[in-house]
Structure formats: structure tokens, C-alpha cells
Length: 389
Ligand code: PSV
Ligand code: MN
Image (cartoon, rainbow, N blue to C red):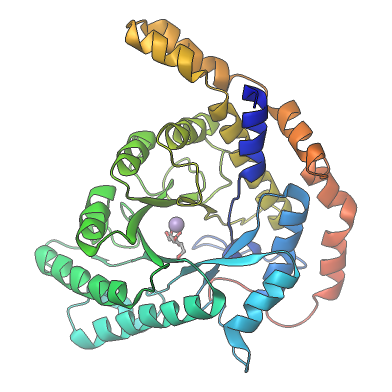
């Protein structure tokens, strides 16, 4: 295979999972702006996700959030999985929610009271039951747990409770299932978060075993953090489970991936490829909210931004880079990386799409499809999906 053919083959194999909640309404603490045509239930979210996959060819799975995507009825989650399959999709990562009940004011799995911890762990076990029904591989755990004031609770004791709860859930995982532990520097807690950083997540995952991995949400670090270093380290340790891609200017802004700092996304994808992480072992997911922009084209754009960063990372001349590094030629090494980053990969991606039988411009194809007008007309009445549903 020529080098270009290998790059194209890699791009054709790329899959980016989209989050069900990105299709619903979202906002800030100040206002949630609704939009016409927003899905009212998980099936309508999947209908929209199918459009993203139809035009990009690169978004075959959808992450669910429980209970936002709760379904009942006799065929329940297996029925939802079948609905997805009929639309060329797969249900992906199951995201738990232990942060929206009044009981969780002082935390969930780290709460000082055993009864609240029990409730939280039971929810996580229920999420594994759902994974059994949907065929999902990954359970993504993000905990809002933490404290606001020094002395509010025992920092060390909360870590012990966290370890205990995680161990119970880990023991429930099936052979082919994994647990992805997500960290976040701050918010909603402001003094301590119980899983604030990759080191804490890594320490818990290491103790739990091989099916526990760390997930890197690109918006969950202090400004200036070198995320690609974290990626390189986790891959080296065999502990990188996946990404929640999004972009940020200030904190956990959840803007479109590649919008704020495409260079950072490129640097991350370079370390992924360099570290052997460009495989299904690493889950490439989006975790975004489209508060003011049209949601479906924003998700299409985000997938394309990830593809562009990946294409540039694949174009890094690794042999030339290694040679420049060996000879200590700082500027030449940097030039190899920058040459790849500064390549306009849009024609290459257009060609890849044409070879896959897709339109070379997914956003334009989506706009031409009339889907936005159709859902605005059809989805009238009922309750639009949002953070609570
Ligand atoms: C909250 O910060 C958050 O964005 C986490 O990143 C989770 O992955 C996501 O919500 C879904 O719970
Ligand atoms: Mn996330």
C-alpha cells in the first residue's frame, strides 16, 4: 500500500460516536434556547444521528445517557438497539447520571451516607443491565461528587468510598464490557472534586483491573494543560479508554470539537496515532452541547473537524521526524510537525468521501436534504428533549 493509500484507509476506518444529548436542547444556567425540530424522545434522537452518519459516513454509534434516554415498554432497550440498527446505527457508550437527584447534594458514590451511596451504585449497576440489552461495550462514569468548603467532608474517606463503589460495579461487568472513568477539574464542586484529574482516575482504574480505563474529556482541564502529554502517558500505560471531544475557551464550554483550538486537537490525534491508539480500543466520542447553533449541522461539522485533525496527524512524516529528533535538529523536527498541520486536508477528505460514495461536502448535503424543514414540520407538540429528559 502506498503511504497515501494507507492514510486514506485509516480515514475511512475512523468512527466518531455522537452523544444523544447533543441532539436535545441545552443551554447555560442563564437560558436554554429551544429550536424547532428538536427530538422529543430517544428514537427521534437516533433519527437525527442517522442523518449525521448518512452524510459523514463516520458516526455509526450513539452514546446514551440514563435516565435522559430512558425507554420503557416490553422491548425496552433491546427495542431501541433494534431501532438504531434499522437506521444503520449502533448504541454506544452508556453514560450514567448520579448528579440530578436531590439526594446527591453532598455527592453520590462518595456521599457520607451509605443509603445514598447504595442508590448511586444501584443506578450504575442498572446501567450495566442496560448495556447487556443494548450490546454496549462501555460504561462511562462521570461523577459530580466533591466538596465546596475545606472541612466539609473527609477527602481521604471520600476516596475510600469511591473505590468501594467502583469495585462493586467493576465486578458486575461482563467479559467484554469496560468501565471508563472520566475526570474533571472543577464544577459543580469548587473546592475538591473526587475525580479531579487523570492521575486520580488512573490510580482507581489501575486498582480495579484491565477493564477499567480513563476517559479524557478535552474540556476538563486547567487552562494550558498539555493534554497530549496525558494522552501519550495513558496510552503508554494501556489505560486510555476514550475521549470526550469538545472545545473550550475558558472551562467546560462544550463547544464544537476543533472549533477553539484545532492545533490542540491535531496534537492529541498525533499522540493517539504515535501511541498505537487509533484502534477501536479507544472510543472517540463527542461530548458537546449546541446551545445557539443548529444542532445537526454542528455535529456534522464536529465530526469533520475530528477527521481533519486526524488526517493532518496521519500526514506527519514519522521517518523524517524521527531522523530530526535523533540528530537533535529542533527546528527541523518542529517543521515536520508544522508542515503536516499546515496542510490543507480538505481536498483529501473530499476524495475519501467520494470514494465512499458520499457527498464531498457533508454540511451542504445535509442542508440540501430538507431534513431540517421536515423535522421542524413534523415534530410539533410534546416535550422537546433536554437535560432532564
Ligand atoms: C459534565 O461535565 C459532562 O459534560 C461530563 O463530561 C459527562 O461526560 C457528560 O456531562 C455527560 O454526563
Ligand atoms: Mn464528558
